Image (cartoon, rainbow, N blue to C red; front, top):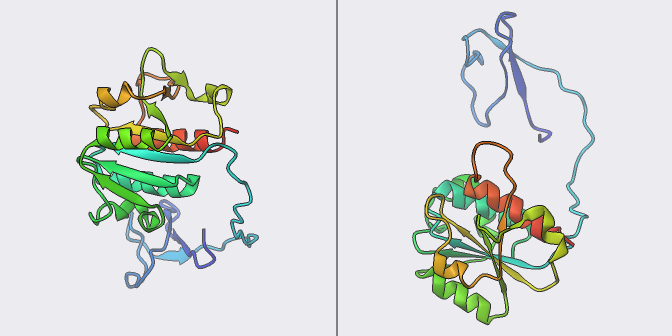
Length: 213
């Protein structure tokens, strides 16, 4: 919440719909979006300012990420935002993975697409081979018989840089790339579904790696 945030609340006791006032010109009379009754500015407590000092340094290894044919612009935008937050040093966008040249990526990246260096590659396997030739340890975010659960990563982590590979929602990581990977990681699932949305899984994994030391 910013200091400029305005919260409005419906004056009808039967509704009491509460919501943040959108930026820009408001509708005349500020009618309730739910019932149409007049709304009032809600009093807010005074909160201490938070300048987000970012004092916690990442203790894990440097991480680059390779997105192997991740189709959704919104997933890719979210992954850019997560990459910026976790300190991922480079995103390799491969195959049909949309780039920030597509304006819909920015809908969820919210400016992070300008902060995180990226490269587009027509062939994800070639990009993975190039990363391995540069000395990156290839790790894939994928379910498999020999996959390591993310909470166990501390037992095998080192300072060597990692190239984390994430695949599309349906097809997953290219089997030829999996064959190059030193490790595969999986995120423990307690419910009916076996996997998470790729952007959410990517966020959990990169933070797990960057702060695993």
